[in-house]
Length: 395
View 1 (cartoon, rainbow, N blue to C red):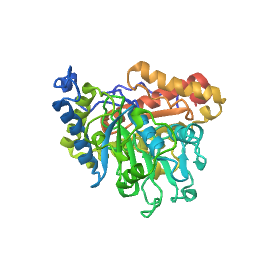
View 2: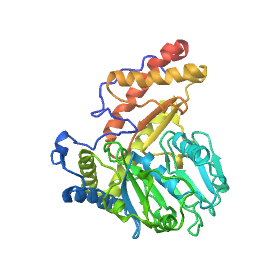
View 3: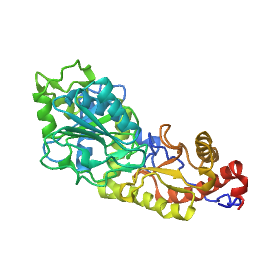
View 4: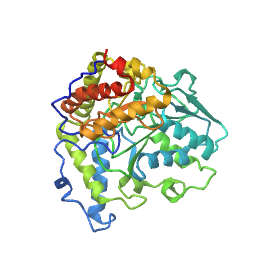
């Protein structure tokens, strides 16, 4: 890497590459919220209508199969996942796949908080998927479809048998609206508004297959459930949750923003267009990385590269020669330089991940902005290299 890497002239029009909350859809302004249903109860007729519209539009864009329930739940994707874990697990053994921070968190909750006696954790380091041959689908399975902190995704659902006995609970927060999900192979799917469609935080979505509903109605977990986790009444599914009758009070300002994102998604062509936008962003980085030489995907297998949470490791010799603490500092310096220049905000690797960069490339991000960012990555890396290894950087 040459020390004389020029300072780029072109800047991204939108420097928001955060992995959550994520960039708003192109052209978004506060005017999008001007019709929000404010100062009124969400239980009023018009309030419930708007909540139901979020559900109906989400269902239509994602192509949820007939018979699936979809509801708005508290506490973002985390709340949706926790509702599923606490309400559904324990009827049979469970295998949880842990290969990055959030999936490791679900493993911790299952083993240490739920204290399930028959729980297996199938692990893999950052950059890889676990050994899928170890999964026993006679058991329940918990996984993250896209590792938000590792940039590793499942390329397809071929590893899941259609005739499985257990449920598959999939955290899809960085996958929904940017990837084809194999609905026939899944039983619980969760996401939040703040990811691919750029909505605001604190609200989650919970989708249940008929098999998941049957489990809820036939299995009473042997533990107390907080009010916000309860999905049944008298042994039957509380259908109101899945018609927009939320368990707690939602922000109707956030609801209006979610509707704006969903309307934009439908207007540009729905799920195929959303997927194409994310894949184009991934392709831009994939074309750049080999030429840059100093960065590579954290995901070791190309088919598992995420098109949303693109995680990069630094492979330059000057970086490899640093001690681990210095590597972490150097990676943060690269991200900090870009933040200071106002060309890329919030792209440092997640705190538990290996030192590197994480660039959100979901559907609301314009490919032109990704392309404009790439020379800045080179410039920032060269600048930091000159500080940490001036002799190598000048070669």
